[in-house]
Length: 102
Image (cartoon, rainbow, N blue to C red; front, side, top):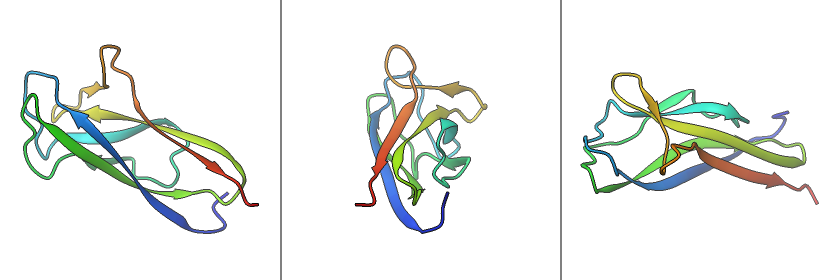
């Protein structure tokens, strides 16, 4: 489904509402949907993000060339390998795109 190369970067702005700091060992990991040729995981922060601080987290993706709606889901992972999400429900970050070749 990737006959052509349409790269883009998805960036989320998130706030650390937890009780521990995020460091370079924390990751964003792909957990489902359409991966859009993104990495399985990537380090989340270039530095430390203390509780209450915000950070931008980005993944480099490629849109499919075929028309349709594509959604990928990403979660955060601690340095101990524990996966967590955002908000009170711990939901995944998502990226949705619509490919329209008209």
